[in-house]
Length: 150
Image (tube, rainbow, N blue to C red; front, side, top):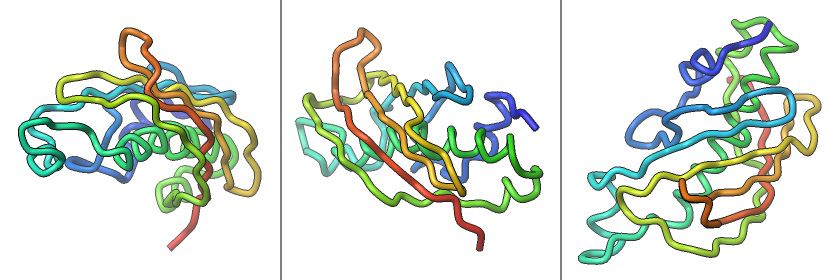
C-alpha cells in the first residue's frame, strides 16, 4: 500500500518535544525531503548555550534521521507490508557518518534531503544533506537504521 505524506507523518513515533519534522515536501521510493523550524522555546536552548543558543549537533543528526530513515522507512515498509505491521515497527539508528559545517540557531528552518542508498529486510541507508531554507549547507553524510518489532 502507498501511504501519503500526511499518513507517514502520523505514523512517526517521535513527538514533541523530540520530533524534528514539521512537514514532508517529497516522499517516494528514491528518497524524502522534510523541513523543520527550530522554535525559540525548544527545551535544549536554555542550556546550549545560555545567552548564545545553538542547536546541538546530536539534534541536527536526529533531524536528519527522522526524515532520512524514519519517515522514508515507514513509506518503504508500507509498500511491502500491511499497515498493522508498519504501525508496530520502530526504526532504530544503526550507523551514522555525518559532518557538521554550520550552526543552526533558534527560528531557523532546515531542510533535510535524503536519497536512498539501499533498502532490504527493513534496513535502510540514506545519504542526507541538511540545509537552511536559503540553501546554505549545514551538514551532510550517511545514516542507516533498522525497523524492529517489539
